[in-house]
Length: 383
Image 1 (tube, helix red, strand yellow):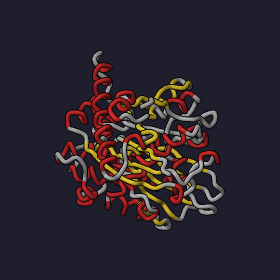
Image 2 (spheres, rainbow, N blue to C red):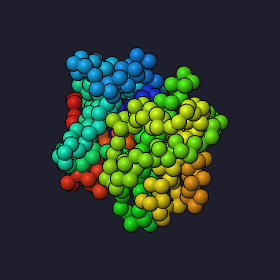
Image 3 (cartoon, rainbow, N blue to C red):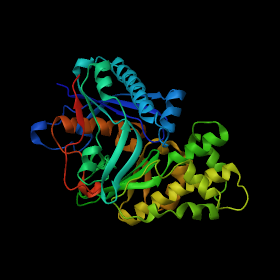
Image 4 (cartoon, one colour):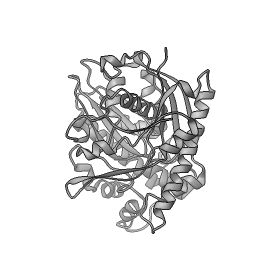
C-alpha cells in the first residue's frame, strides 16, 4: 500500500520549481505521530523546472510595490506558476508507474512576494503568489496551499516552517545537531539533544549572491562560488553589511526580500568611498552569509557537532568552505549523507506538511515561529 504526496517549492532565490513524489506509507496515521526518520518515508522521484525568464522577471517585479495593476499582474503570475507546477507534477508521474489518481495531495508552497508577519505588534501577513484551485483543475489532484497564514494568524512568524520536518527526518535521540537551509534566505534549525527544536531565519543567502552575479556577469548564479572565490573580502563593506539590526534580533524571527534586496545592498555600497571590484563584492556577500550563519550556530547551537546543509547554497563549494572555516569544531556536510539530497529537502518538507494537513496533525512549532500554539497548516482544494 502506498500513501503518495507531491511537494512543490519555488523559493526566494527564484531559480525555479523543485518537485518531489514521496511515499509516506510506512507511517500509521492513527498513531498521530509525525515521521521520525528516513525509514518512514521514501522519495520516489524528483524534478526541477527553471522559471521561464518572463515569469521570473514578473515574480521579481512583484516583490517591489508598484502601481494599481499589481493585483492583476499577481493573479496572472499565480496562474502561470500553477501551470509550471502542473508540468512538474506531470514529469514526476512520468518517471514511474504512478497515476495522478494515486496521489493523495500536492503540497504547493507558492512564491513569496511579501512577508510582514507582525505589523504594529499585531498579526500581519505572509503573501505567496499561487493558484491552488487552478493547479487542482490542471492535475486532478487535491492541493494543500497557504501554509503560512494560520501560524501568522496565531501570532507567529509563519516562518520558518521546515524545522518540524528537519526534526522528524534528521533528529537523533540524545544527539545535538543543526540543519542549515541555504536558499534565497538562510534559516537554521537547532536540534537539541533533549528533543527540543528551535529555528529562525539567519539572513540573506542566495538572494544577494544571485542578484549581484546577475547584475555583473549576466549569469543566473555563481556556480560553485568560483567567482566569489576569485575575489577578496572587503572588511569595511562587510562591517557595513553586518550593521543591520535584523542580525541582532533574538528569535523568533524571519525575513525575506522585503528587507534584503537590491535597494538594501545599493544603500550599503553608497556608504563607501570609491568603487569596489565586482568580484570583491561577491566575495564579501558570500562571507556575510557564511559569518551570519556560523554565528547563529555558535550562539544558538553551541553543542552541535554536525551541521547538515541543504538548499542551493549546499552546492556552493566556496560558501561551504567558508562555513567550515568559521566552524572548526563542527562537521559541515550536505544532507546527502543522511539520505536526502540537498536540493530535495524543502520540496519534501512541503509534501510532509501536506501529509500532516490531511491527517490533521499540526505542522508548526510554536517554539520556532512564536505562535500561540500548534496549528494544522494550509487550506485544501479538492482535485
